[in-house]
Structure formats: structure tokens, C-alpha cells
Length: 624
Image (cartoon, rainbow, N blue to C red; front, side):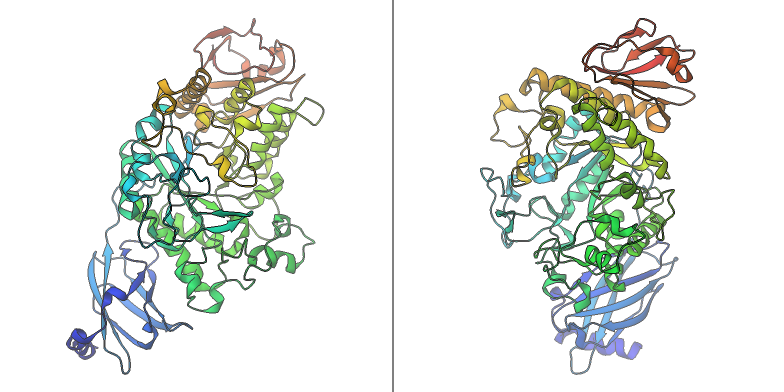
């Protein structure tokens, strides 16, 4: 072995420049429980090298594997638990080729994991969803990156990139803290080096981040890897957390894996001709056909989003290793997984097990736009008897979202109006732990909630009161707190507008980051949300308590969040006339209490004389 190492070193001066080589993962860490590492080496004709040698204590080469493409070489390594951090060389030798010396690094894991970073996200947190390109531009110098396929930044074009970046988010940390945000969720940060693509008849840039072209690179228009790490550090230093948006299902068609797959079976074979039917029922339907299930898993959304074949063990390893790497590298506290229901089920469980094995406090929740509570519960830990059991902690709770909107908008009836929220929560019996679900009212794929509610202040207040007091983790879409509005009109871009005041050229009089730039209605909305968020963060009843709801009566709906230390009453009157609750109906939870403090106004009411007006809602901390 050492003879070959010497030969390699002697010939190194004649070897091909190692700058042409790419490594995935780019580096690794010592101290993981899983000791295996699958290292992918990419370079033209690298497959001609048939032998590899490593001489570093604790690192053992198990196997060298070639791929169908000559441009890849796979090295299966084992990193012993006692291995020390450091750099080492990998010598590659092949017949009739000059040897290559490849440098690799093993880094130390952070001692702050689970303390100030990788803490997990909980029901006491308030998640704020930001589309980075549309939030704030803190560094105009990175608006255009030479060498990228899309070099346009034009705010007058709603389909173009607008220049928002990590510096813009960093500059607004004080604003986020004032609002009461504890956790920032950014739409994907990974490199999207794609040209503009045709979607819904529009020529659209990949400003949203869901068209990956390199997992291990953060998009330079946002600031790149170093700026992302700095933003994560800054959030953690300010007592906040970070959720990263994951996409397991697909990549952009300019990803290096799509341009030159290691083998044909790294991608599912429909090639965009047979899109998924989007019917999640096929997974739990006892009568479903195998063909319908396979189309759901293998179909490409659109031709420019190749679908990854997670049945291929190397594809699964590549994805799992990246998410372990990124969690450690950036100190991610949680992952939101896009298009969860389109992924191979066995792979999803393997991913969740791998992440929580290395990061026990990490939170992972999936996104599946589904049409029923049974469908939502199926993809997480549940109480149902189904052939496959998912292990995800929680999901985005679309059914509670739709129920809150219906409860605020619809006229009351036997099965309409506020009773729909009662129905949705009654179905929590399907979940192992509904506190792990993420509760929301809108996001970057939906009409903005203020518009959906007809710009009605009372309905908006009602929904916000529910959002911040229900079980689960509340999430707010950027700008909702200052009443940003719009509907999707043949595009998602109309609900992804720039946050007013986030760009140097914006009118200072309309800078919504400042009190002086808000209307009275916007200031009232901001204040309500801030007070609800601050109250939730310190409330044992909302963060950890149980929920008890009562059947709506004449349009008045009450539920309680409670622990031994605190009881919170949430009451909403969706009828056309004022209501005086009959407290004898609710004595299970009100017995011993005589007053309630409104957490928004700080007013204290006697329960005996309490009346709630038409379309009014309140959050009351009960007092004995």
C-alpha cells in the first residue's frame, strides 16, 4: 500500500489539477453515530481510476465503486468514533493514468448543538416564513452573479428576481424580535442556477428557491454559504431559531445530477410525460392499484423538475448525507420538507431516523397539500391501522387552516361556519401528537389571508387569535402582520410581493418595518400579533397545555388551553348578535375562576357580566 502511495506522490507533479474535482459531501464531521460515509468524486473520466489509498487514523476505505457515467467515482468510507478532526489525502490510481491526490477534511462538531443551535422547534415557538428574494435587499452587490444562467434582477417584473438576501433578513432581526418571532423559516436557500422557465404560461425565474442545481452550494445571490452560516449564527445569538426548507423529491434540470446522472436510475423515468395525479389517497386506500401509487411517486411535476429515484440506495444516501451535513454545518433547528407525499415512504422514514439519530432535538415536519385530516395524519405518527406507518413528527396542518378560514367566513349552520373548526380539532384523535403540527393561515403557494377574509378586520383578528392559541406550532407568512394582501392570478408571484421598505429605493413613508410607515389598521394588526406571540412564548397553557373545546352554540365557539398553572379561554362569536355565555355549560374549565384578562388590551373582565359582541373574539387568561 505504501509503495503505491509513494508512486502517487512521485507522479503528483504530472497529475491533473485537482481544482477540477468536486467532492460530495464537500467535507464531513467526526463524532457522528453513523460511521459510514459515501463520498462521491466528480470529474471528467474520474471513473478510469480503479484504486484509492488513504492513510489517516480512524478512516478506513471499504470499497471503490464505479458508476455508469465515467465522470463519477464512489468511495465507501468508515469513520471510526475515535477519529480526530483534520485533513488527509486520498490517492487515486488507475491504469494508464497519472495519479491524483485529493485532499479531504473532517471537522469537529459544534459543542453548542442542542443548546443554542439545533434546538428543535416547539409549540411555544412562533415561526415566520420568509421568501428571501422578496423580503429585504441588504447587499445590492450580490443582486447579479456573473456566470449564473439568470443574470436579471428587475423589481418591475414580478417573475424576475428582486434582490432580497440574507443581509436583508439579518438587518431586520430587531424587527422580527419586536414582532415576537422565535423561529425564521426561509424558503430554500440552495443554489438555483437555472435559466427562466415556463410555468403557467409565464417566463419565471427561480427566485423562490425550489429548483436546486447544487445541494452543497447556497445561492450566491442570497450571499452564499458563508453568509447563510452568519445569518444562522446571528439568529441563534439573538435567541432565535432557523428552519431550512428541504426538497427531497426533485431537482432542477440544470442540477449536475440531471445533466450527467451517475446512472440512468438516479432519476425516475417518466421524463415529464406522466406527471403525478396528486391523489394521496392511493397510499392508504385499501383498494388502490399499484399503478396509481407508482405514478404518484415517479411522475415529474413539470419537465424542468427531474424526479429523484429514492429507491436507488446511492440517491438515498446522497440526500440523507446532505441533510445531516447541512444541519451540522449551519446549525439548523428544524426542517420543513416540501412535497412530502411524493417521496418514497421507506426513504422518508430512513431520512427522519438518520437526522434524529444524530440530532435528537431536531424538528422535522412535512408539507402535503391534502384534502382530509386522515390524509394529513397518514404522513405522520398516527393512531390509524395502515400497512405503512410513517414516523414524521408532524405536518403542515392544511385541514386546520381551511377550517379556520371557513369558521371566520361562512354563515353558521349544522355543518358550516365555526363548527368546521370544531370538526377539524375533533379529528385530532388520528394524530399521535397534534402539538407537532405546524398551524398556518397562508403561505407562498396560497392567496394571502387578509384578502381571503375580504380585508375584514374582525375576521382577521378572529383568525389570528385562533392561530396563536391552538395546539401545534403557529406559522405566519411574511407581511401578514402589516396586512399585505393579494390573490393568485395565473401565477404565485402576486402573493410573493416585496415587503414594503425592504429596498433602499422604497418610499420611507411606506416602510412597513417602521411604525411611521404603517396605516392605523396595519399598526393594529402588528400590535395584535406581537402581543399574541409574546404571550404564547411564555404561556405554559399554550406551549404545553391541553385543549378542551365545546360544541359551538348559536355561532359562539369556546375552547380552553390549560395546565395546572394556567388556563386560557379563547372565545369567538361569529353570529350577527352579541352573546352572553352561559358559564354553567363550561364549568369543567371555569370552576374557581371569576375573571379574565384580555391578553391584547390587558383589560380585566368579570365572567359573570361578560358579553361578547357580534363578530368579536377574545383571548382571556382566567383569574381566580
